[in-house]
Length: 346
Ligand code: TRP
Image 1 (cartoon, rainbow, N blue to C red):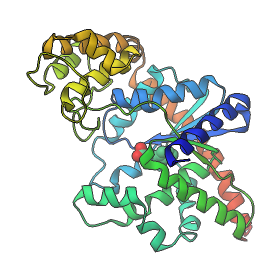
Image 2 (cartoon, rainbow, N blue to C red; image 1 turned 30 degrees about the vertical axis):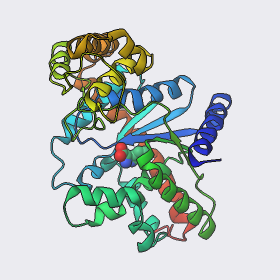
Image 3 (cartoon, rainbow, N blue to C red; image 1 turned 60 degrees about the vertical axis):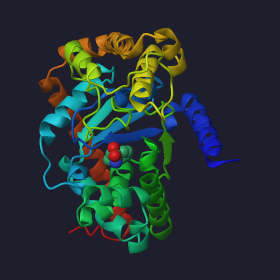
């Protein structure tokens, strides 16, 4: 069996296990608040969270604010990015009574777990993480200590609440692997405290950006969830396509056209070739019209939700989430220190 089939197979089994025994699991997932969330996040992660919430699994969402400074000099507009991200999550139907939103910088006990965890990994293990290597390259800067060790910090994000399932994109699987290693080594060396969590890779297709490259906050090629219908139309009209009137799905030779087809198709719940057939020989103008309509129809409900949820509502959700996360982190840290013979009683 090839790796892809094996992964898909395992994900299928995990999903049925979750549906049958939601109470056995705790989900921990999250994101770096480096910018505004876009349509790719909605399809790739947020809607998946809403489905897991509906299945009855307790979910924690970390706004990984310390992770912002792994590859840049300053956190930027991090407060606003956090509030807007939580607003988008709430607008998509996540319920702060059932999903715990928290900022990891607000949880000292979580951060303290990083110290014993660092003792469980080697320099060579840290250096061979392919995602860290790629991020170090992309940053164009010298490899910082936090960039090198953030997968260990991410292990603390996951293990502080004894998460069992970690929904992530493929690029985060090496970090889940590192978390599994840390959990196993801690359990073997000290005491069986931690479950060994599983990564849950979303089966939503990755949405290309308006230029055909990966939709990304840093490429500025995304449809941000906070955009109005008019702003969305303007962004889509600006997308680079080509002059061929016959619209076809060909991601290699026609990345711009194919990016729009995939975007429209995902919003419509059909295949990109079907959208191409619909547009036919209408050319780029018709393709853009169809895409604008599909995206704006799809986002209508989300935008209405966003308009009802204020930044203060988001702040209240995080305040409550931080308090809950902090209580759990303090308990876990106590257990960890006791297992290590460091619960001194003085
Ligand atoms: N590294 C994740 C990202 O790139 C964000 C993240 C931080 C995360 N801590 C986490 C994801 C814990 C899952 C679990 O978006």
